[in-house]
Image (tube, rainbow, N blue to C red; front, side, top):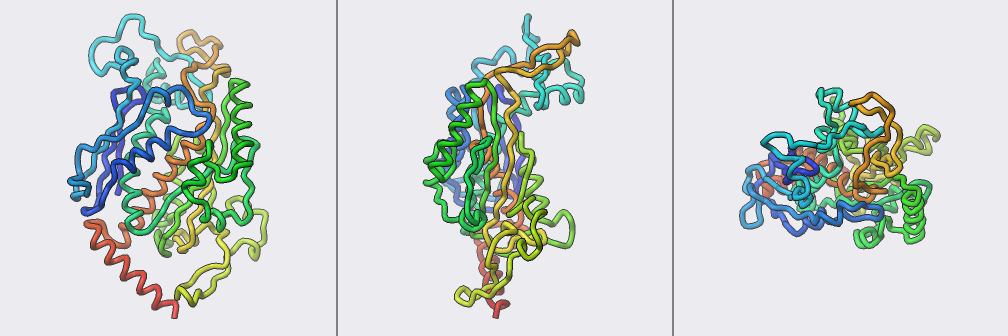
Length: 391
């Protein structure tokens, strides 16, 4: 299963097309809209969220609530387009007095994109590089999430750091599975701990008072996975590599760790690796810990997959940094427009979707992709074989 998406931040709409969708998958429009609403929420979001009320329109690939085996097309309308019809017109002459974006923002794609494409207006770059495009990605991921849910796999996320405020967990790569979506979603920053939530909000308020922005880290967790997804034989097979690529494809992500991550560099092997035991009650191999974050040798172990992702502060600042005016070549303040103070909680929702797509592809490679009934039958057979192997 893969997707392509099109659209600009202030264009008429964002569109995603999801291909290789198996037939017979039940899809919920309300669930996709719920994910879109989650992407728009979180303490520290900006004024754009008060304009947009993202909902999905499905125009192909689904009949009577089930996929029919053809590409699924999903559209999310941009309400703010009404305020940009002149500046973002598809056809016609450039309006007189058009305001061009000629003061690129440090930390954004503005300057490098303009140099790459030989344009004197960064608007052409920032419209597509804007994180607004993640609305289409979240909508597309709704299909992948439904696929995984049908196979008993859940993907969720939570914020564990904003600035200096950190949610310190005991055995986080095991205990994280005890959090419920309700614990997470009722928090203003999507952190399951009330004390840490208050500290994170204080960090966001501090950045807001200074007219600055702030980043943080979040965890994405997938439970219910079978062991052996991914591969070890080639570099492209390794699920670790695929997940890293998917997570780094999200705007502003600067670091990805699995399980203990960089902490393993400080530890001895006996403190890092997860001992293997035989669970006789469930008749399967398992581990006594999950420091690896559910991945060994590029494959899933069957334990929860845990990835921690670092997001940098948003580069659009209300107290802008110095830049160079592309017209005059003089020092200037970087451009600024409506932005967030912190989008870490929203980015976590986007990351859930990217992880979901990687996992779906791994399942389809092992168990087929034509229809859900065949996939489930093949998966059932595989689970039965694993039980036999553990004897």
